[in-house]
Length: 107
Image (tube, rainbow, N blue to C red):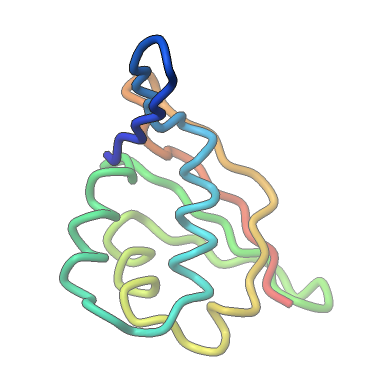
């Protein structure tokens, strides 16, 4: 988790990352180049719940693919052109503020 520190004239405020920001992190992983894949793996382990469910809706109504945490993490660590064409439709978090469910559309 990263912490942003905003300095003002009167006092310091610490703004914690909100669970909704995880969608932005996932999108960044999906769109980025393969740099420091080991760091990416550690970061994904922190934000993805152990019982993660991922549904990838295939193009042209061909159906859907299902991934668990291990399978999805492996796909995101080394992004391909297919991963970069995916669009996040829905994300649900669990009580520990980790991502528990993701629905993605493959374009």
